[in-house]
Length: 208
Image (tube, rainbow, N blue to C red; front, side, top):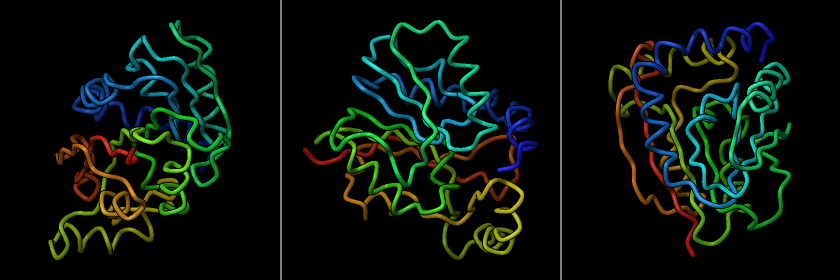
């Protein structure tokens, strides 16, 4: 991801955060417990919404530009739990097997190089019964005009938007990785181009 993109990312997303994402993040993260890992944490938009009773929060971000802003945000925050920043990517999580109570992905499973590998890594690091809290934009309904537009635009979009894919079927990919979908909501993102609007958010669980 370019340094320029990381600098302007928060400005690009500002209106969408106000319109829906802040409310969605707050509701989604309220039930996080124990040791929590957020993958692809970007500039730290979710940081303020973590509940105070966490044991530990580890946020990872492989992009240097994003990570610099994330580190600054963590350092400047007054948090009631231990928080640290790491540089590893979702495809190779540098934490132990079954060591996390929860993993959080927010607008990141669209842009990882290998979505299947990332989901298998998340499954590996979660304890039995552990939860994946997700908020992701996804492919539109197959055969719809929006899905056709997503497929047409995606090759260029990926280059402009940090490897962001428009046509990933993320819910199905989670199921194929072994997760049980405990809850899911489907809603349109606001203040974004039409091709990015389909979204899912909810909780997937690693079987106990």
